[in-house]
Length: 261
Image (cartoon, one colour):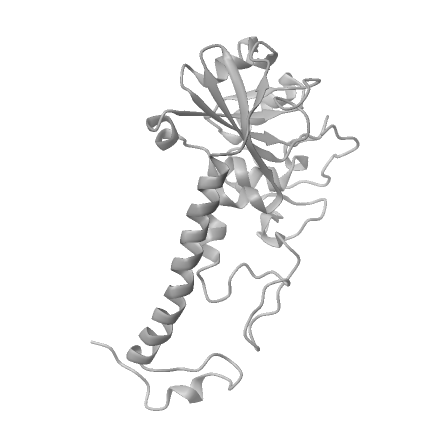
């Protein structure tokens, strides 16, 4: 049973979206669905084109450093034919709270890749940090996916960080097939996808919102917070997931004296 107020329009300012009955809402929803389906089909077409991109052969014997020391990049495939890596930026010598909040959002949403593995795809996170610093960070964050240092390793295995990159294996030969960065990384961030469905969206200033909606803030404003849960990118903040980790304490500095991307 659905109940409605006698005069629903009195509850909201005039400049907000109109209040209608369920049937009228369904009509408007169905109109938007046409656009959503077109968007989905275009995404399928783009994915088809992505699968047809030319490939670049890579040196699968180049060594990366993990918990067992140096290993050939080929080992990251774990015997599978496909590999997806995320290249996590790193600030040398910075404490945990000083590491990249944007890369944290991507890595955190890929904590469990059991469905990728079931499909024959391996996953790893690469970073330019020194392995001893990286290992400490991985332990603190509780990450279960494999991490490797690609410090001083050339592209496409190393190189610029902040990218999702895909590789294909054919025996002992390795090929770069695709790479994306910036908002291309949003594909793995399920939280952003859900926020895009909510009434207030991401709460960011660039979004096109109805008049009267809460004023948007800077991009990614919610990705860091202080000990009291207030969103801030100041020196007393941590990437949001860190507050769920044992031993996370209030901080006074990000400790980013230097960085190595």
